[in-house]
Length: 192
Image 1 (cartoon, rainbow, N blue to C red):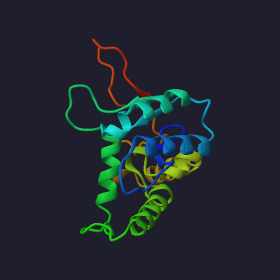
Image 2: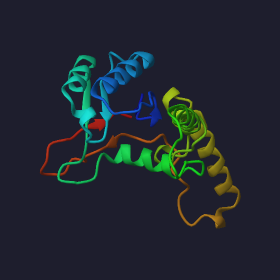
Image 3: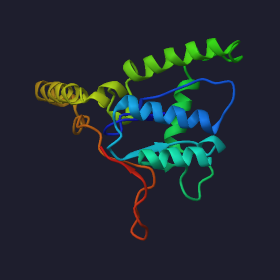
């Protein structure tokens, strides 16, 4: 489960179970919301189209917590692009076990390690190459301001090296799952 303030991409809750289940998913959602202390903020859960994520228990839990569900883009067969991007990052790690996990404990250990790396070390391209944790806590702003200053100074000192503007180091703005077009109503958005 990812989320947090300003579309941080931080994984705020995770579990490994031997089976999928609506009840298990609902418990995870409740734990993550309470742990993050975000019961009074509007939340969006980006999930795949699996039955545990769409079951009545899950829908009731999300409704009670004030969470808006976001599953997939209209008229597109792929699951949610946010979830898919996270799963791709996970599966392309060099230490991803190609033959699966021997035990549930092995899977839990691997996921715990992955979440630590993803949240605290992974420089995420969608949020201007800062870590999800830095974005989540607001520490990205100082990092991005330092980068902007560094690039501006480098361009001033060596202008022939630059053919155009420097990279945009402003904090990433809102993320739209289904961008509004001229003829459509706005769709689910994460505020940034």
